[in-house]
Image 1 (cartoon, protein in one colour):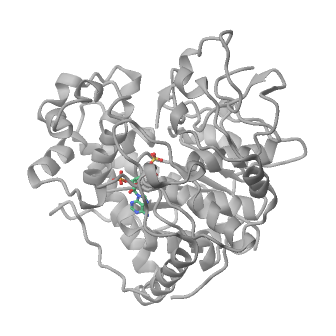
Image 2 (tube, helix red, strand yellow; image 1 turned 180 degrees about the horizontal axis):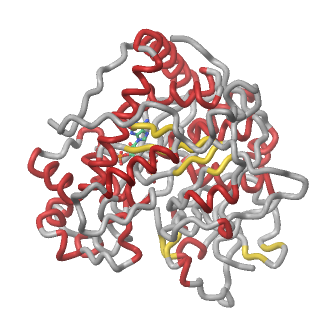
Length: 464
Ligand SMILES: Nc1ncnc2c1ncn2[C@@H]1O[C@H](COP(=O)(O)OS(=O)(=O)O)[C@@H](OP(=O)(O)O)[C@H]1O
């Protein structure tokens, strides 16, 4: 989510480990209160991702210490359901021209990615696209990083790399003393692959995730309705999405940098400039270029299949894939856009549609290469693990913000209710620690890991 920087910084979160002073090293800290003398935000932070003051979790100091001290252990394995075919919620689509089914990421065929055969934890760049299930995957990777004591490349301030600017190496917090290299880079950014290569080791694995635009766009629209300029005029409309799609050009100014998510949001995150040009071979070349950049593009509609491919690539154990669906909107699961609306969503987000179809085809070629029988068996095992994990950890289904414990409540935009989880009462300490991380929302986990790595709280603003 984005917020005005001032709003994000105006009141600090109570975060794990927030017993540190409210400023150190001359920096303003996200955990401290910014007073009247706070310098005005620089232009680049006029939009930053951050929780609103009223929504900050209130973690107690003892909880904070628990988080810092307890080792996560999430080791329950077992097995179930069948491999779904390649279904689609988006209706008939032209036969995709199958892209090359080879691993064409940055690691050359002669290089062994750290995670696959070497037994070491992998170096990973995860390009965290918006409203695609990315927080769920990020949480898996956060837990991997914490469990294996990996070094994260964090934004120098807030939770994203100066989004919506294109990523630049200068946005990264310097390595902590004695650590090298960075192992994981997982925060929201707008892709600039060359700059990422300047920061991350050459054997890094590049991952991202895409979701059916017919699902992604309503999610983006609901979440950012009061922050993305193109959506704002509809904030109090009774049927805002339909009204927007009726005449989007009336609201959308492509020159406004804040409108990056207002059209083709996934393509925007992956660094593409859609402009008005829909046809031509340019986009085929761009998609092929992205296919060479990424070792794996996960598809949210086939999250479990994607995870199993990621598991092989990263050399993970099955138990390390345990997850719960994070950041879900209340009511969204039952909200399938009517056919007319879905058509309009696709027409407006035409490049996201191309991107999604291309990489969905890539995924299914990868599954074919993996072997359907093998995939089917592993899906059964994974889904049994997920059932067991949920039964062990959760008090029940995901609940609305009013029913979520303060410290486990995801950030809430004012235009949608985001669900969270409560933990089953009475968990033994080690299980509590691992279950806690499983359901910990993005901002809280991000802040915790930053504090763990640097021994101070993160900056809310550019402050050095
Ligand atoms: N595993 C899995 N599979 C499919 N979809 C999933 C999954 N996990 C999360 N979600 C849905 O993704 C939406 C949240 O996306 P993000 O976490 O990327 O949002 S954010 O940009 O980080 O705020 C949000 O969508 P909506 O509920 O439609 O808003 C989640 O329900």
